[in-house]
Length: 246
Image (cartoon, rainbow, N blue to C red; front, side, top):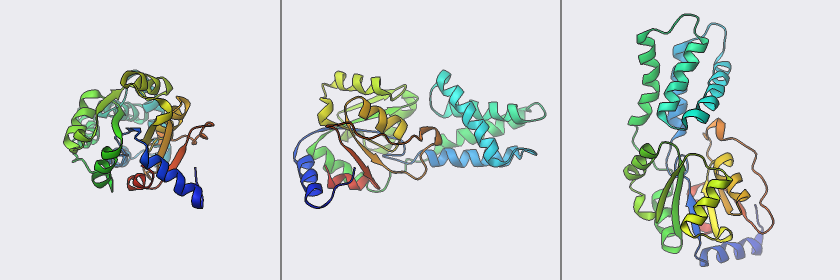
């Protein structure tokens, strides 16, 4: 949603002055995440070095396998590792050797060792938002791994609650509001994923702020839906842009 002139100024001031609940995504909203998976995938494709399939074709196979595995195993490095192994086995002419299995699994395991790299503006913006609004973290994936990342990020004290859910769909947002006593029309979901952060939050009656990330995971891509009547959708370039509205 884009505003012009006085209307935009009024909207910003009204939003900033009214205390609201801000739900926030974690991966690729507060800190970098998918870039490490992309690097691991690039290394995997180079290692596979398929004679017939080009990199884009291998990636399509991997995407399909990941979609299948997520339904059964959820999100996280362990599921990603299994997807890489399954992709290698599906495309390799010869059976996978023990050495190959260890190498492919290593591409996935390397992700867990990365330091938490906060997105630009997060460290400066979160305290300001927390002083005016109620912040809640809502992320999906392996609960232990996600909570460990939150602790390592140093951001946990800014949030009144941290929830790790299996999937972020319309029902999950409604349950989140019910559990924490949130009024949907005074609650915003902030994130980088149209599929998990924006569209289902709007469907649940919340407002939403979409923060563009150039490396959002391809399985999270989806056209942004319009904000229903009485709801708002902001499209922002950076996390720091939230200060203009909240």
